[in-house]
Image (cartoon, rainbow over all chains, first blue to last red; front, side):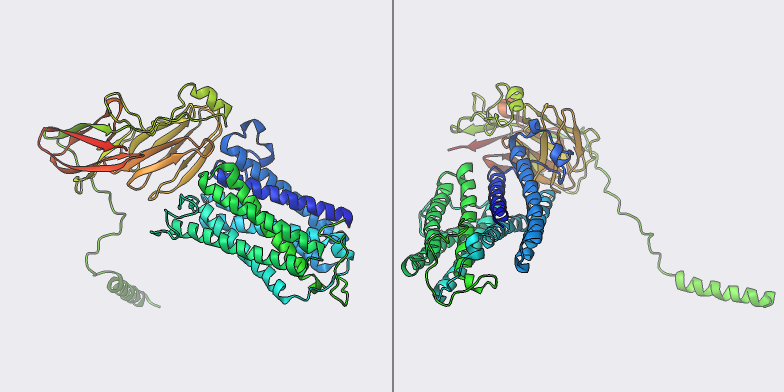
Length: 320
Length: 257
């Protein structure tokens, strides 16, 4: 199981790399640099000459190659889970992740063939985040601390609701960001922190509305993350695994908010714009991890203790 | 059945068929609508519109395009690496302005030229940068570079297309079905490459060249609305009356802050 756990972490890391590569494609406006799919300029994908990976092709074809690698890894992951993991629901989850990756690849192809229609491109972006969260969850479910540790139920309904609410808010914010990105509204409001010199835009259009919605969402998500993390740090500071995630969340949301502001101020500088997407994915996955840990006692595979005592300090997420 | 009964039966059937199918109004046979015949312009009375396009103010300096994303482009482009947003002569003349008859031709129709319009990709630039074409006329896009390009047209009224040309010397033929001013072209491989085509259902268009000059020749006498389009400065229109055998001078002045 330890090997499977390490492999799952590797797959999750590769998935985050894939999301970053996808963000690089949109940040450089290279989504249609390779007009055909699944071939690349008539070549079978894996036989396309490296020497021709120039300009936008480097990003788009590179994204396709990484996606193919993640797909292969995910097949291995699903098969491995089927052979090793005794928990039926975890095995199902691994196959769901594989199915999601296949669907994700299909969406990627369709969006190229139909010139990046917004609904398909947004679905592609949104599903990518779900795939990443699935792989991160699988890594958690195979971690020794999850598998063998004793889950002390967290008798805190407030925290339970906070975490679920924060997950929902972060994901909605990711989707709004994807809509903004795929409708070219990233600079619809060119100034920051004000909007055309005002707190609220003096005039409205669809791009301005979606952009302003993303800014409002950023404030709400930041507040939700701080509330959740603060709640953990105040009421559950003895739980090391929760405390670590709480601090990580505070760090990530700070970086993410800063990157969002810099994206506007730098007029969508490619590196900053790409990092904003990757950090958003990391933030979502971290909230999902915290939520799973808070609701850990609900999972049937976890042996429960009768008291809500603190876990040993060694039972960190994904710990060895 | 004897012969008389057989004839009677056949006669009744013929009568029924005649009543059922015949005797109606003289409905015209269904056929595809014919395209209106091209209207010949009387060259004996035709006039011309000529003019220049001027830019007032100081445009932003051309920027140097960094083509190092593709070493072939760096090599092929040589010194031709400046942006083409404002091509301005020493006298303020503005090039790459698409000038065309926007209104005034009425229901006239014009033949579609049989010769294709050429759009070349050379030195990782589109040549020409701005041009015109008629509806249904063939546009031939060729790759003159030893690198790959994709040709991505993003029209609003016509069908979008995106096709690859991975090999030098490849050509791609297409045409537009609807009038549209302008249809943008871009290469997603080389993000700096862009071009614009004005699609019209008549031949009265031109692009200001060196000296900002343009000409719309062999126009039927009449009242026209002439529009000038520039990729950064938008459009301007003027109403012009062309008399028989008259050549009318028109100038457009764009202003940049």
